[in-house]
Amino acid sequence: MKIKKKKEETEEEIFSRVSKSFSSSSIGIRLISFQKFMQTKLLRGQEFKKLEDIAMIYDTRFSFPEENTIGIIKQEISNIFNKVVDYQSYLSYIEYGGTLNDKQMNTLLVTSLLLAKKKKVISQKHKLLLFLNMKIS
Image (tube, rainbow, N blue to C red; front, side, top):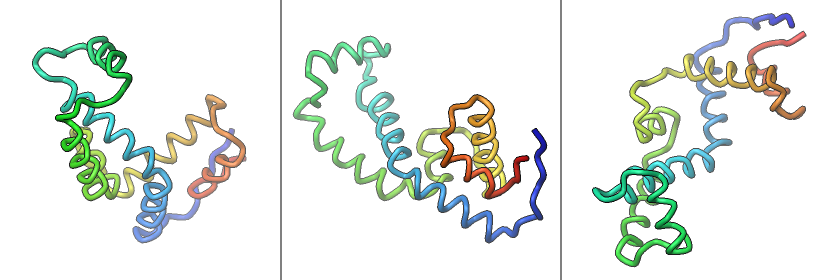
């Protein structure tokens, strides 16, 4: 498989692509953010350290939150919608431990697509996304 690089893109083009990518992924990103909150802040109190303990509690409550946590959950959902607005804030929210500029994020996204294509876990329509940065022959 030959990979031919396209012409060098402007910062504006890269920013636009990264912004569009975040926008199209925002629902999944917010769900991941909420899961991070649930597992690390809401359910991992002093007495619950293992995921098995958390799963047991979910089972006993049929996945419904306790009455005293509903307000906390609503507040955090609002925080996620207001604070997780781009990849940088998302990486910060999940405590990734570093920052990526738009060019680095673009490279990460393209590399992820290439790896998915190589592993044959990418659909035909998503293969078109690869042509945003590279021409595959």
